[in-house]
Every structure is written in C-alpha cells, then in structure tokens.
Amino acid sequence: MGQVIFIVWRESVEALLVVGILNAWMNQSPNGRAGKRYLWGGVALGLLAALVLAFGLFEAASALGGTEDLFRTGMVLVAAALIVHMVRWMRRHGRTLKQELVAGLEEKAASARWWGVTVLCAIAVAREGSETVVFLFGMLSGADAATLARMGLASAAGFVLALGTFWLLQLGGKYLSWRLFFRVTEVMLLLLAGGLLMNGVEQLISLNVLPALVDPVWDSSRWLDDSSLTGSVIASLTGYRSHPALTSLLAFGLFWGGVWRMIYGHTRQVRRDER
Image 1 (cartoon, rainbow, N blue to C red):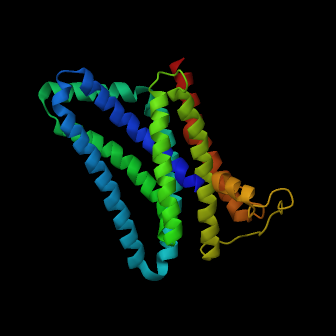
Image 2 (image 1 turned 135 degrees about the horizontal axis):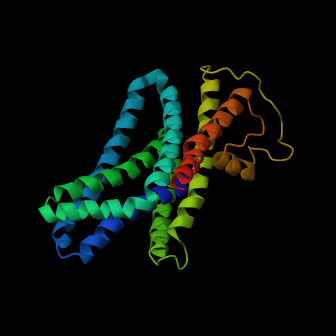
Image 3 (image 1 turned 90 degrees about the vertical axis):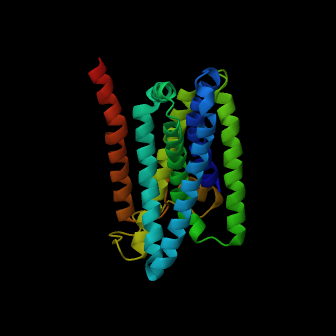
C-alpha cells in the first residue's frame, strides 16, 4: 500500500500546485474573479476524464480475454515510462511553470476567453489523474474486495497527505521548499519506476515472452530476502531482487542508463550551455 500512498500523494500535490496557482491569481486579480467557475469546471472535467480512462482500461482488459495478463503487464511498463516522462517534464518546466500559467491567464482574462482556463485546468488535472490511474491499474484489476478497500483507504490517505504537504509548501519554504520537495520525490519516483520495470520484465519472463537467460544470477536472500516484510517493501520501491534473472538485470541497467542520459545528462548540458 506504500506505493499507492506515495503515487497519489505526489500526483495530487502536482495537481494542487497548478490549481493553486490559477486560483491564487484569480483571487488577486479583479479581472480573474469572473473566471472562477471556469476554473472549477476544469477541475471537474479533469477528474471525469481520469474516471473515463479508468473505466476504459478495465473494459479493455476484460475484452481481451486470454491476453489480459499481457495487457496488465503492458500497463505496468507504461506506468514506469509515464513516471520517467513526468520527472523529465518537471525538470524542464518546473522553474517556469508559474510564469507560464500566469501569462496564459492574463491573456485569457484580457480577452474574456475563460474557456481556455477550463481547458488548461482540465488538462492539468487529467494528466495527473491519468498517470495515477495507469499506475494503479495493474493492482486494481486483479484485486479482491478486501484489497480494493485497503487501496481505497491508501488513496484517501495519500490525498490527505497531499493537502497537508501543499499547505506546508504554501508557507514559503519556512518548513518545506518546493525545490526540496521535487528533488526528493523525483529520486523516489525514479526508484519506483525502476521497481515497476522489474515487475513488468519478470511478468514477461513468466509469460514466456522474454527469456530469463540466466536465472538466478545470484542469491542474496541470506542478507535481504525480497519475500520478507522489509525486503518486499524495498523491492517494490527500488526494484531490488534477491534472486534476479539476467534479463531483468539487463533491463534494469538499461533503464538507469537511459534515465541518466535523458534527465540528468540533459540538465548538465543545459547548464553548460547557459554558461
């Protein structure tokens, strides 16, 4: 359930950030107050879009019949890719996000084109909601009633935690800064994406889609067994395996090599160019 709490927490904070920026500008601007109903209409549309996506994924999985396991595995891998994309996007746009949003609002307020605010807010909320839906799909689709109830509670806890985190962040860095929040959760998200990738590759191996090559490469269960309580938590959050197959290790290595090149390598290049 830790994965559920974390992903709902992080995605909710990002959605609250966008909505909070838009709402704060409208509260401070006489021209902006007229568009408040369009803002909240966009929030509702974004949530509706995420619910439609969830319904569509479950319907697609049930329609696939014998290939449902393969579909679930594909969604796990898509979730890992979405997490990497989200981190990369925030790295590139996080510092200018507020300025871009405010500039867009001022333009729409001047021309009274408030439907643009609805679309902007709907896209922001739907983006975070859809990423949450894709991430949770693999667990929800095969869960029993008791597990669904626990996941519902975990999701609620993640959202409440997001509200508290957003409140702390709004205090202006007195207790928690946006920079620190994004840097810490960025690393946690990438570790989680690596764990999802390992799950997906292992499922493809079990479905005979990929060969294991060498299985296992080593046995580290005497030091940390991934079937133990502590080991399972670390495994789900980082991709650690005490009996890894060679194919899984190769995929894991390629993942981190790609992440370093796409995210951290690009950031270093941008900084060098700015100098």
